[in-house]
Length: 608
Image 1: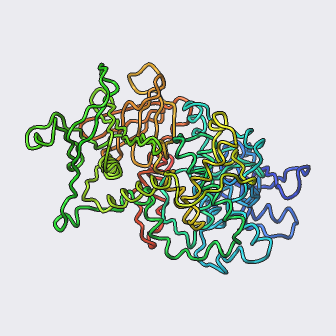
Image 2: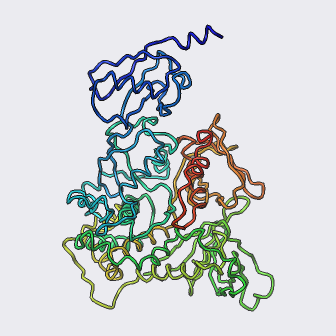
Image 3: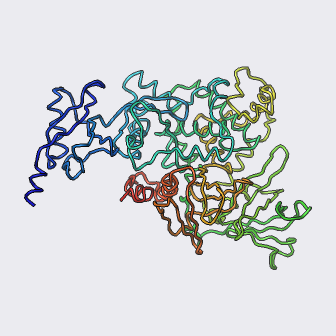
């Protein structure tokens, strides 16, 4: 024992590169013992450099192990550092180029030693999340005209680039392309340095989880603008599909937002936001989990929803199209009968919509109001179309709520109906006043996606966009942005992140879609949804890190397992855990961010 103790106390040379001495300076050698703590190593280094400066941000980076030595009280022996270790004494905060959703690239200092989760929190705090306002902006941006200009660049929508520049931007051509995009998220549990990010590298800052917590227009002008820009480019670059009528409305809203952004200065755009909390609450994602219908069940009467609907099942081997039935909505199910006289007897069939996929199939101009349902079944998903002659908004709202397990009694039902009606009204032609049919300044390439430029000439698109513009021209800047986000969130493919996986027992690659409330299995051959599983039916999930397999157990003894084909298993695990973490957060201002819980839910073994 004495012999090994003497050996550990023996001095040996440690080689450390000090970045501040310049790239050509030789490494410094210091004499150490295994019992010397990291803080003592740093002290010896600082003394040997003879540089008089603030070293408080510096730390030791272990090159071979790709890890920081941040526990200054730990000894070299406890850290496992021996004479062959190559250490670098370097600042923990380094410059980073940050690409924002609106196309602006900022150069700012970021922490390279904390987890990416904490580093992003720090970046976002600097950009917008400061509650103390000065003259309508976070106080730290009011220091000088230069910083005020930066704030304006972040909080006001910028003019679109030229058509040639837009044409060069990457557009996913298929769902497979989208799976490649979503593999590139950084690991939230590890630092930037651990993930190969170096000084002055460029990273993209994006909203990852489509659950937007505590968005308040009064304080979050930057966050709201950047979310709008992310949504806008997702539509323009065809990352998410929409109908032709929806595209014209999106184009009109962009045109309106662009005009207001140019005409309004930064401060005035922040005025009049106090009354917008109600508008913001109508955003669907903010409402998920907010409403609780059980509290008021005793005092309320469920709304009645009965009517003749036309039903069509495209997968059935029949030449018949839509057939009319008397339909009754109750709880989360639709029962249909041959006629209203039969409604007291047994229904022909009852469609349970819990866990189903709901999408609109609407043409306002063509007076076509249909609802596409993909309903879970043991063999996969049954496809059914409902055609409404009346009350389309009520039926659509009921189907959307039922898919989440909510009934017509739920407090969000009337809000949902109102949102759908508003959206439809915006797509109708405005014949009240003469619309300007031409505008020389309008750049249709920046307002609609390439698909519509192939289909129509600019002189055909301009009057259609301006016609839709008549329906939104009275909206304030923030109301227009909120309306754009609300319609974006109503799109069938909103908020889906795609991953290529191989399900256990299957011989082919498939696509797994992950959203804020469910997992979706998509058949690559036909591109259709095969199965949907909701998080609120999830009992447990775990990862076998050796074979990189995710296994999930749902209610009803339903078990699924899959391996990731082109993404790190941690990325998928982090998506599922991250959405479950988001669902645990309350809407109270006092709700502090529980970072430990986030890492437990997303980090697996790395969090332990």
